[in-house]
Length: 147
Image 1: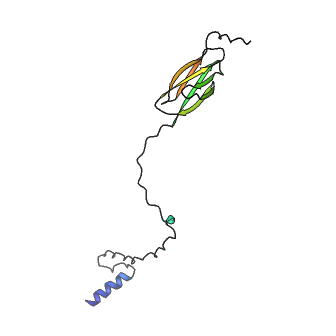
Image 2: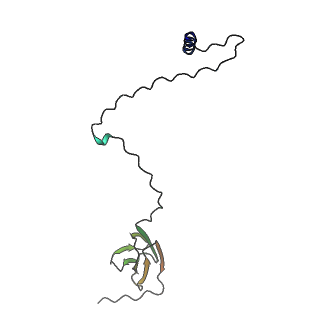
Image 3: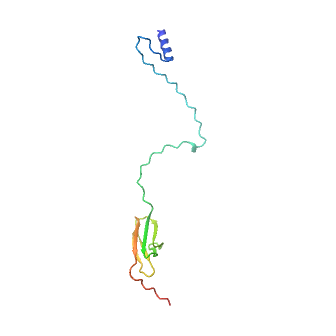
């Protein structure tokens, strides 16, 4: 039996040869995998910051948040009217004006005034963007006489 095992061992070590005539072909024996090599030991990192970051769990996809401000757009005919926010007294500018104000669940009173015309007051909702187009109509009111 020893010769048979020696022949099998030598056949496994030598390249596959075609079988002698008249003998059935034998499947090639599986190739032996080389023994696993050990990776060189890792050196400890000098600082904790050099360590690889831990895998972060994926955050759920959030709906886009609304901006923290709303846009107020105010135009007038004729242009150049003064725009004032009455609840804070803030002067927003002269028409045409486009300003961003903080979003909140409230209304703000706006006054638009143009010399020679009656001022116009109206409320705007600060939860969404607003636009106003004003037309000052009628004759200009008479300006007071200077003495």
